[in-house]
Image (cartoon, rainbow over all chains, first blue to last red; front, side, top):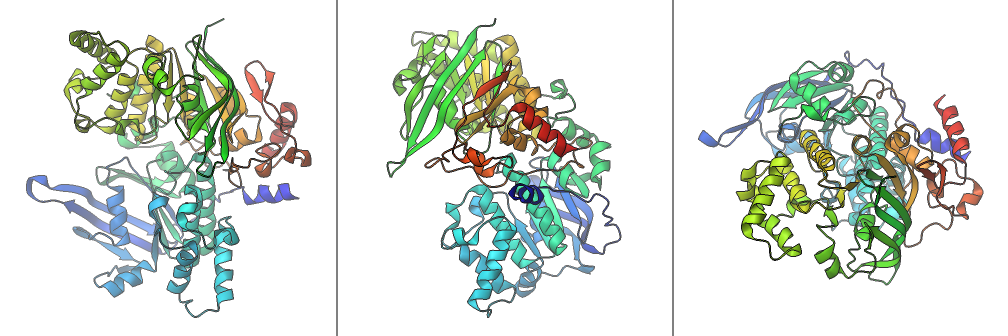
Length: 290
Length: 337
């Protein structure tokens, strides 16, 4: 019996027939640009990119280091202003001009970052991290038992045991556990958009499967849009509905995961795919410069 | 039969914590590598891969302590040597080690050429400067590295170039074994490919006689090494050729690892990604029986109490499990439908 349970819990079947093209737009942008510096030292990190992310869609933005992925994600989060172009949120131009409006916007968009070790305040216990989320979603006056129940539920969603975590500090957990705790936060906050910036690059391949599994479950559970930022093209192919390929601040190609990865058109995408080690095809080491 | 370059017999090492607790991070590990071959070590974080690398070089520093067993490189037993002895007579000439953050190890105020001088002088103080320069130039040319890099500082080089330079510097004396611990995990895919090509070239040209490659990226191991060994909680659980290990793993843990592979290839999207539940055990108090039993889907009640030794079941293949390879393969075939 135990064996069957374990099997069910750890099997991910992705429904590849999902049609999201009719879903309403969640986040979109036109001509989004970010320029750093002035004069001779001017550098365009993100160069007039257009995108449309729909509700419930799992989008990956793939590119090498320095391609502008993180700058774009910071603009989407509202942590960095745009130099040009406009971002729409749920059909309306996004307004984050005041602090109050920004706070309101952040209730809808949440992020998981690359480095789990620096995502938490080291002075706050895990209970505080989760209680904060309950307070933010209007649960400030709930009785203590109800709060504990919510926290227990969130932890069990990511296969953590709340009884073992309570009264501990984040640094007492492993990297994989911390990243799962981040997902538990998202479970409590139930945002419309989740922006995951390389959430698995600092943890090993085995825990990576668990994290991806949980992200997918969470997406299905609360129907949010997930924007996945990564340099790992294999991961992007596995997880996403739509893939955007970014090079030097521009989207060189986008489309459904099958389209982009199996029949890439842009030379950059082709190179990126050929540089990844594979297991069924030969890995041609002679095609690389340097 | 090819000459055995590295032979490790029942090597056991431990960490001693602040509270005087013993943590056996490498537990009775035996392995051997022949000339011209490479071995990959795979496993989750914290399963003892990097500790094994340090232990087989004989490079013990507290809190890491040697317990028992031998590590023999080309007839020289490294176990029980003092760290000073290892540094002077083993590192660089017999064994070269590239740690995870190797590219950040370069002193920013010295030029690359100076590091090469240090490595050679440590083993041969009488060498003339001109001699060393010539040797460095020749090696850089053979490895297709720009010779100008010798007169540059580390900050002037890109990440991928720095990593290649570190590899070239640490193998300048043509060591018998190169231990590369995640040499490419901090690099992007293109730089990673260049580093891997260089490592392969070094094997072909005989600059290194054998290689141990440590990473958790299985597609990479599959493309780089001849054999793969899977470690779990300080022990080897399975060993075989790269192809057999990726396409036909026997141990439930190896199978779990292989099922976590993500590659951009047709068909992988439809496959189910299966994660291994739970976390590796705390080695302060390892499980009494099979160490993987608490996380194993195929565990029997007796697995909790009985530890099984690693044994061979085919030429070059060994496993550590209560169930026979035939039985496990049958179960896997049934599951895959």
